[in-house]
Image (cartoon, rainbow, N blue to C red; front, side, top):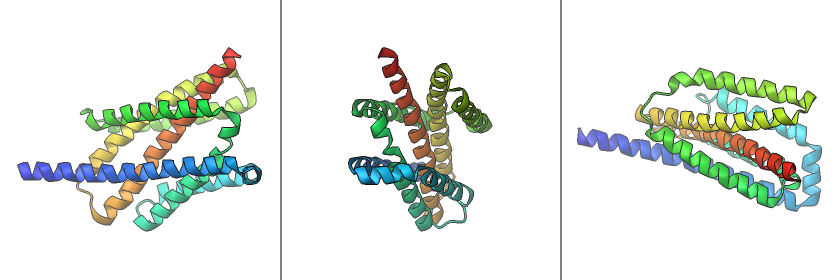
Length: 228
């Protein structure tokens, strides 16, 4: 019994470590590409000119990784994840022209702290959160609709509300996704399947982090503009 418990604990620890390693690599690549692009004026201008095609390419990569997760090899999934992280870095370079370095740094640190706390919560909470999956799906869809509406009405109050809801939503998704990944590890996934699952799990957590960062950054920007 003890050997089984120890083996299970080791499997979970190994799987989660692999997942967070992929996620950290993706975040580091995104940050590095964004910084280097912003430092190169010519490249930054080209990225701005190609912003729409780059965003469409990002969406395509996410759909491929999500829809064909079980069919792709871990090597292909890893390449697509790295490509997605690099493309995100290119599009995120514009943030360094819109927000001050202090705001970006503060938003990143706030996101890292919140993400870490929510991820720990997802790992240790005993209550099954799987029933929350449908709620989060509809909440994300509702948030997207609100964001589209706000493109036309341009309401500062709605922008603030969307940002607050976005932070809370992706904080909740971080807890949910972490627990789902832990449960997957407990199921005994191993080998090629485990590596593929770790990459797709890293993508889910990466998206939680990135979206939470964007909404927190908007809150920082909103607070800064209110003081001016």
